Length: 334
Image (cartoon, rainbow, N blue to C red; front, side, top):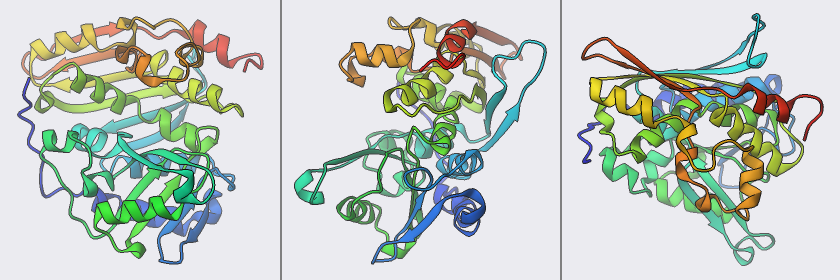
């Protein structure tokens, strides 16, 4: 289906996130992040490579990732039968721009060991600077390009980016070095875990797009997912953040039509996938650490509610899998 989505050109995801970026830098000591500048003046925020980081930094970086167009919060739930005590909650009234034009980790940034003078580097860039570079075909579909003079990018990687990658980002974004901020959040860090789990609504939006639903249908998006502690093992850390969404993520979307609401309630949940039912780290390992061999239908929230503005009705699909999460996260399990 050809999307009829039309972006509001007046909305700048980079401009909207600027106050959040300033807060991240100004409150660095309190947030336990390290702020440095390259020789050219680009700001690098370390939120878990060498710095301690933390959940509060992760929440702020998640909001930056959404281009300042979403609300992200950590909630503690000690009710009668909680899925997990700590949750990340997300809401946006601009779901397509916040999630797909900004938060989605779709910009491949790589450098060879010859280019870095040491180890090869790879990261998927996310955040509002993606909308300045527009290197992904997705931006042609969205019909959106940001032209702000400042930009912010988030990298989920366990080392700080080499200068050759920073130069590529600057060139593709058309930014002066002093106008770029890069935040680095390793998956095995607390901040990294938070900012990935905060993608629960983005994952739903991305699968909605994969299913061929017209993105102009999506009006509002809210969601929550349990926040596990990170594992010191990189594969297990990635597995935990994915499991939080695939088996514990709950999303509520508001759409325009009944037909789309019914379709998404039926097709969106992760339980539709061939590989559903096993911990993500186990699936990833079984497919030789190749994301592209995994059934893409798996990358979705566990449970969804989809409300239609056409009739006011809501459809429900999927369910959370508490036993799977408990088996992975409780009792000192890796």
